Length: 253
Image 1 (cartoon, helix red, strand yellow):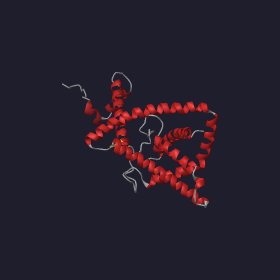
Image 2 (spheres, helix red, strand yellow):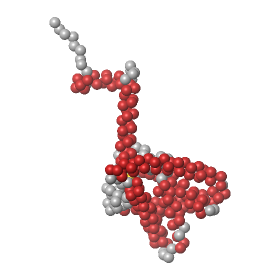
Image 3 (cartoon, one colour):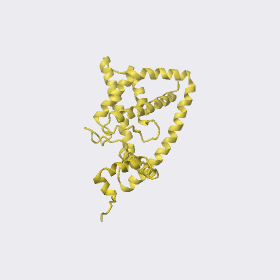
Image 4 (cartoon, helix red, strand yellow):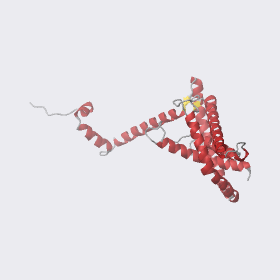
């Protein structure tokens, strides 16, 4: 199969799988998400992370170089391979982070609270995770990638699915970059770097507040319902009711 088609397919798989991995990690394991909400981890709208797509292509190419290793001992050969994978993934992560900071004045992620971090873009903790992912890829995924490529070479109709993905992906990139350009213009004019995740979280909270206000005004037009029950509960609490109710008492003569 053509090498370009192979890498295009691997990028497709890596982008989707990486997005799923990040969604699960942020939902259940990330300390930055104490509410454990489902979060879209990327700057694109759709379910894909290009960083993982490039990463999986890199892991695939490095795994193919195993037979050219000059280390004879199998254990140290594998250890060197996983170290190379971790370094390569860390370099990709660093380049992506620097490109967005310098080119767009946007910080997509922030490791500033992690030990040994460099500019908040990379840190030893996540480099270790890259090594673990490299090992998982080599033992559990790489053989199936090869089988998938063999299957793809026989069932070329699946190339339509890959092509459909890239069509949507490119539209998404154009739309998201337009949004990024607006943030970039603001950041340049004010000489700041925008932390994208914090900005998106703030926008989410404001959107939820607007929805809550809209629901409140909708309930004003209902005789019974959430607002009516809410008012009845407050009426029973004297301190609360005194703040918004004027109690009518009959005057004694």
